[in-house]
Structure formats: structure tokens, C-alpha cells
Amino acid sequence: MLAVVLGMMILAIVIMGVAPAVATVMKREREKELLFRGKQYARAIALFQRRYGRFPNELKELYENRPRTIRKLWKEPMCNCPDWHVIYQNSPDALNPGAGGTGLPGSRPLPTPTPGAFGPTGQTKTVGPIVGVRSSIHEEALTEWRGQKFYDEWRFIMGDADRDTQTGFTPTMRLPPGAPPSSS
Image 1 (cartoon, rainbow, N blue to C red):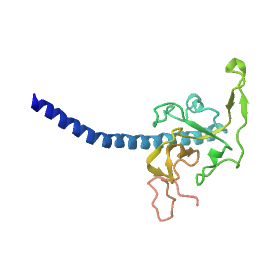
Image 2 (tube, rainbow, N blue to C red):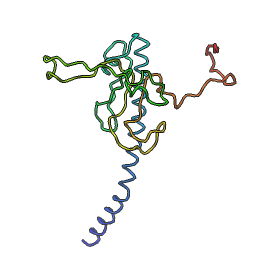
Image 3 (cartoon, one colour):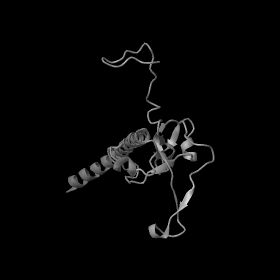
Image 4 (cartoon, rainbow, N blue to C red):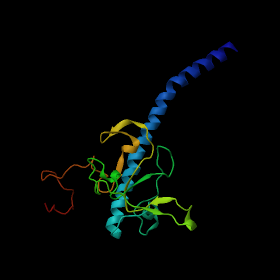
């Protein structure tokens, strides 16, 4: 009986030592997933704009319009909820420093009153063209991304999804077989 109790105590100590490491690994995986999903939304918004000549007014337009511009409506991985904070054109969020903002300083989409038949009277809802998304979770990340330490500072704006991973084409780089010659 004493050996069983000692074994359980040793097992509990080992689990207490390993649990923080497992939590860190899981958080790091959620961070990678946040980057992946945010970039997917930014690419889908850019594709939507090229395909339809306008920006989407809701994220569900990316999925519901045919042909689709996104495979699925991704959940925000840090809270595992569908509640992304959308970034509207001409909003201060769209002017993320170093992210190639798309709006004018200080201008925001005008809030539109929600009619009584569709919601409580007097409640306002911001509408406007969506140019990106960001997390709504204000928590310090394990890693920095583009110099930002908090998840809600990581902005995924159309046309900017791959800025941190792209490298410019140089004439000394070889083109893959069958690729058209560059026009630069």
C-alpha cells in the first residue's frame, strides 16, 4: 500500500513538472495557428477584392459568395471562438505601422443605427468594407510577430499577409521550368 502511495506521489510530481511545458507547447501551436488563419483571411479578402471589385462587408461573404475565396470560416484559435475583430477600411486599425495601411488617419466607418426590427433600437453597428482581421484577445504572446508582443496587436491586413515571409525576386534567381520570363 505504501509503495502505491509513493508511486502516485512520484507520478504527481512528474506531471506537475511536465504540465507547464505541455501548456507552453500548446500555446505556441495556437500562436502558429493564429498566424496561419489570420493570413488566410488576409489573402481571402485580397482575392475577394480582385474577383468582385469591392471589399467584403462581412467575413461570411468570403465563404458564401460563389466562387468562394476562403475554404472555411476559421475560428480565432486563441479563444477557439468565431469572434475575430474585423478591421474596417479607413479605421485606425487599418493603419497598422509598417503594415501598409489602407485608410486615412482619424477616419472611421460611420456607425449605422440598427433598425428596431433587426435589433434593439438605439444600438449601433459599425459597417463598412473589411480589409483585415485581428485577434480580440489581449494576452502576451510567447513570440513576437512584426515587433508586436500581444495577440490583439497582430493585424492581418489584405495585401500584407506574406510581407514577413516574401523575398524579392532578383535576376540571379532561377525560374522554375515552364515559368514565364519576368517583365521587370
